[in-house]
Image 1: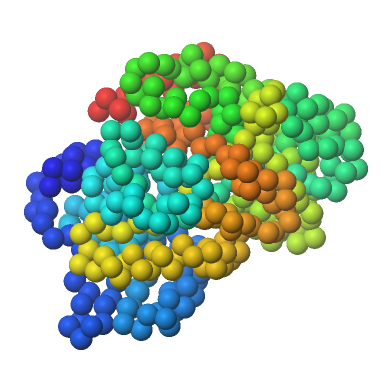
Image 2 (image 1 turned 45 degrees about the vertical axis):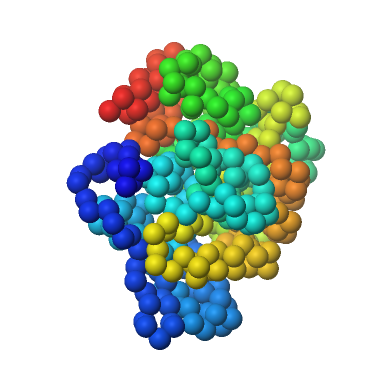
Length: 411
């Protein structure tokens, strides 16, 4: 009860609630059990429906009902206040997951054999979201994403550009493209969020993983540690097109698909959209080499899907059985193939050739997390970064980011 109350305070939902007996009572009385699976991703509804059908075929006494509402994070927070959490949850690995985990409402998987089958980097990422003050592992990292540099293979080949391994090599590649009359990087900064794949890509290999924890403790600032990040963001901006802030994401995908630009700094989620706009385009990917030490350049990757179970569900055994099914290599492989994602489960790899350039990062666990996943929820970092790129006042921008960060955590 103490832990749940603490979590509600963290969520800003500090009302007095009756806290006993979370979870559904999906027992029909005849041995049949119905469980609710809550997902925050509408894109994966068809995939989940297929997997549920397979699971139910082998577990005829268990029925899984999928719920994937719009505004899922708001819905799950509201259901917490109503003492109505689902039995099984498929959530994003972000600040909301950390807040819910700190509320003490998730099952602790510390002793689960599944944890030993997951890439340790992603287990660590979830642990950082929960915070060092809480012991336990409250979710299974399942599907992951990648913050990457997408490039037009045909143009890169024509220009003689090889995949850069360092910052200087990347700048040299951009110069080559610029000298040839090409648009080196196609920006879509009309939408503020599209600045963050670039910000995260640059910061991911320049700022230490424990920055947010030290910032929250008052031991450091963005002004002190993001100076080079800000400089390199502005340097990249010089290699854009004439209307960097006038083009949005969808139009940018179409433009890049149709030959505008050599490089496109985005997440793996943009690739299906680009391919849809031009099925014949040949794309490649690589990790943004923001560091001049090649061995220090890892791929920025995060937990796109974390699976967890309601600590107080009436049917934990059945819920954990579904988690075990999802974590099997066969099921995990089917999930990432259908979702064009990556897997946190060891030895389960994305085989689409477009990802050949970053495959080694997953195979060798050369991964680092999205820096902004640890920024305080609600500080509006994407708008602040967009303003910085428009006004190009580095000192003022970093001071504003520091001030907004502090304002949120001191509320």
